Amino acid sequence: GKIVYVGSLSTYGNVVMIDHGRSTRSIILGDFRPQVKKGSLVKKGEIVGETRYIDSGRGKLYFEVRKKNRVQNKYATLT
Image (cartoon, rainbow, N blue to C red; front, side, top):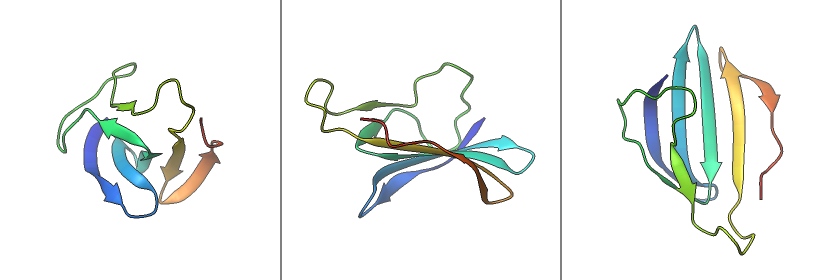
């Protein structure tokens, strides 16, 4: 997919949005360091970011898939 947004939201942390085409996007939010830039292309299995707290359990991530801007499957917060 193509990275269409890299930034932050004050209450959610960092954000990476990946456009997969056909009105489908993946959104990753949370306490992590993005390793991609807007406009870059990523393939299955590529690293898009790394958590800040590997062993402390403090870093949390949220992941969802949207199709036509509707949540398709909402994944639990990962800790």
